[in-house]
Image (cartoon, rainbow, N blue to C red; front, side, top):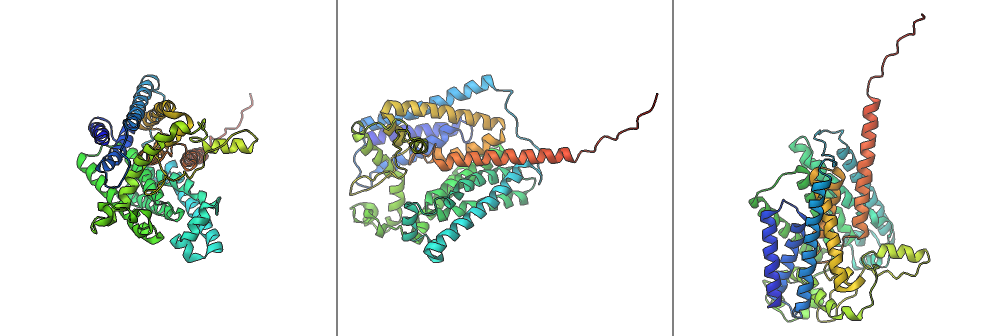
Length: 437
């Protein structure tokens, strides 16, 4: 009953946010995936541990804190910065700085991908590289191609910039061209072996395009887009899993007694159901042992910072990026976005963390709505982390932070080049000869 009540509350919040808030509001991007994940968990189609009242209250408290942070930041900015945020330039054309930045990002993504594939092909062969064989995945987990795989940072930035360029394209053909380049960038994520990277990069592309057009879609369009996204996710996780060998037959879930594993028609849905609902079950396990885990004091949420600090000689112990698995019969290693702040300082710290994160998301959202090009790109990238919050905490993940920095640098560089070019093309004033008195 606890799981059903939590799911009903989150479904109600998601429905309210879709009807009353502006399109792509942070609370929408947070509440919809949480409503979906908790609803699937409430069906209890796998032998999960029942959800405790304390875990349900923690989810509700963090959601409330996030919503409060969004509201406070948005209202503060409305009062303080109404006239200070630049509006997106309405000029469109091939020389626009967004178009230049997007083109450069696509080229950089392609170059980075080629270097990555060449490095893996030299060590594992072309076939294993292209199908991302188990040997390649194990090598990547051990640190192979640690530098060249960072092309995914540029790819996330490129997805945002291509979406923004598509939104500002002066013609339908230009829009299709940029969406096609964006789709190619999204497809390049396949070689990182993370199927979720493909889905999240697509979300970045769609978010940037939708926010850049600054139009409120109809409910029919939203339903159709949601259905298309669901079909795409199922295709990625089923067909993509078959290519790389991650199928139900090769998964410990196959030995679990469940309607999803015993009914032939439902077997293709077993793994997608687990991917969507297991993080809720994992959070329940983690909440039960949270008191026995020493606080990481920030080295879970900001593991990269602590890793740099440890290299500099400070007494810091960064949490591993790959989280430990739960025990059989359902091993799992993602614990929703509540995972890392819970490890850092417990439930109260997690509530404060999401209140501050809500302030950040709300502020970025309002600045993006005002028209800041950099904010639109950054919000589109962070939209992927919000949509993934029911599965994993990516808000300060290196690829998210890195993509935002790269997008901002490319936009700033393109704007500077365009400005210098326009100054250089101005006619110089003609000098008149001096007259002697």
